[in-house]
Amino acid sequence: MTVESVNPRARSAAADALREPPLAGGGVPVLGHGWKLVRDPLRFMSRLRDHGDVVRLKLGPKTVYAVTTPALTGALALSPDYRIAGPLWESLEGLLGKEGVATANGPRHRRQRRTIQPAFRPDAVPAYASVMEEEAHALTERWRPGQTIDCTSESFRVAVRIAARCLLRGEYMDERAERLCVALATVFRGMYRRMVVPLGPLHRLPLPPNRRFDRALADLHLLVDEIVAERRASGRKPDDLLTALLAAEDGDGAPVGEQEIHDQVVAILTPGSETVASTIMWLLHVLARYPEHADKVHDEVESVTGGRPVAFEDVRELTHTSNVVVEAMRLRPAVWILTRRAVTDTELGGYRIPAGADIVYSPYAIQRDAKSYAHHLDFDPDRWLPERVKDVPKYAMSPFSVGNRKCPSDHFSMAQLTLITAAVATRYRFEQVAGSDDSTRVGITLRPQNLLLRPVPR
Ligand code: HEM
Image 1 (cartoon, helix red, strand yellow):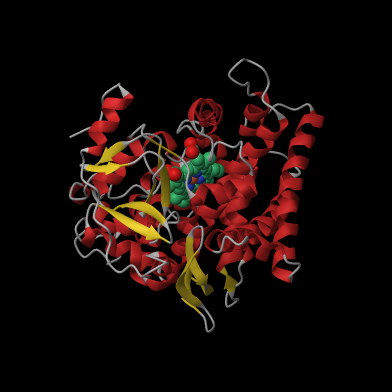
Image 2 (cartoon, rainbow, N blue to C red):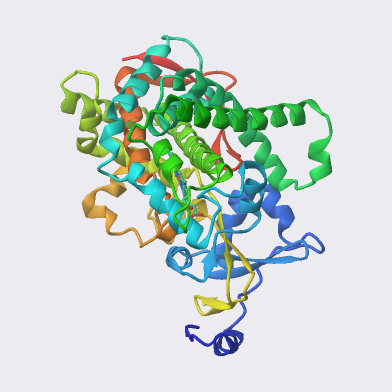
């Protein structure tokens, strides 16, 4: 049954006739399922499918709906009955601004997507080749044999530099990219704490971590203002995303406001660096943990390049390397949780979803589900070979999401991740060193707690 009547009253009556999703088990009085979600969110989200395709969760007094099957996450992402909202987005808005593409809805969102999309089109990505190559090789050149690499800062560094240099091009970017790295790493750490413990006064106390967070957030906004002001003052209009943002017009043909330009730059840089950095950390982890796959990547790159430094145009031939990237993203998706809000009474999987309801789903749970993947927890890049990929259910692997909120940067991200993996695996083997902690740290993204590796030259 669907609720597709154009008449809102008829639509609402039809929605009322639908079943209510079952309540997930394991809730406790007062806190409901909240304590489990805070204590072990990945385990909690991964077990919800046992309770139903759509289940109700109690988070304190609030009811939240969780979607647990690949097909229904696709239906949710593609349906116009939901918009971007919910606690995740509200806390992001509070810190990063309300006027950027990642948190906008409706006509403003469509207009902003039109502005940013050209910079990410598959045919635009080759223009970033030289920066991606330079940064991937610079990463390996920074490392010395036997040295301990702090994978968190190294991954952030390269991710921020590539995003900033490619999309906001400019000479000043090198020095700014370093400042952006420091600011973003601190902001992301603090932001997750503020999301899971939304106690405003606590975060305003003049404690060192709060001061560090406030300073980093202020510097992030200052940096963005500087970048915009300098580009304006230079009079230059290179063919890049910043030029497109500065030239954007609102729905009435007037230039967009300063706040929107600022929030747009923030909205692109922040998701762009945190997600890529986390994925690079997991890729380095994979290379250390599965030396046989690292060797296979090395052999593939050598056979494609014949021993010269790997280049952007090799990427499309590096099929195994790309499958390693996809498999790493399957098991450790940077974006592990997503939320939506119903804009109307509607249905999902035959269940009633009331207007205003918050809906949550976990790409982590979906991509590790035994119902979708044979040997679901094995790291097996060959499951992405053409003859096997057809066994993967639709929407069971959507790390960039689908629909109108799909990440604009899927080609841009895949190109740089494949290139970086190829560059580092051809030059080094990796070993974890004492003090390294590769357990999963749950934050706004998933990443290793503190991955420390030793590069061993090949
Ligand atoms: C491994 C890399 C990345 C992953 C896994 C990833 C994942 C995602 C996902 C899942 C969404 C959709 C969120 C939703 O449905 O609610 C998204 C949106 C977005 N991503 Fe990415 N992303 C990555 C890299 C990037 C990069 C490099 C950039 C920019 C430089 C970027 C910019 C954005 C923006 C602007 C949105 C909001 C789109 C909209 O709402 O219309 N992402 N990303």
